[in-house]
Image: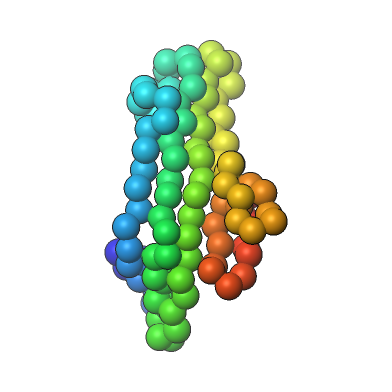
Length: 103
């Protein structure tokens, strides 16, 4: 998949397999629209490649949880992780040689 910044024409190309799993069941769009409750999705990708417009590449991995919640008054989307990479807990995304946390 290629993502382009229309202002600068810079881009990134994402190559690899990403898996989205509906952990809890239910439909996130219904939670955000009108139904009360919670739906959690897990996004996993191991060693996918990012190619930047200057030709450089990086290998990344992702393991994050996205939780959509509606209590009837407040709607929230929470991004978290339960993954441990080396000695770092809650690793959302990382390069194999370097830890990067985005929480």
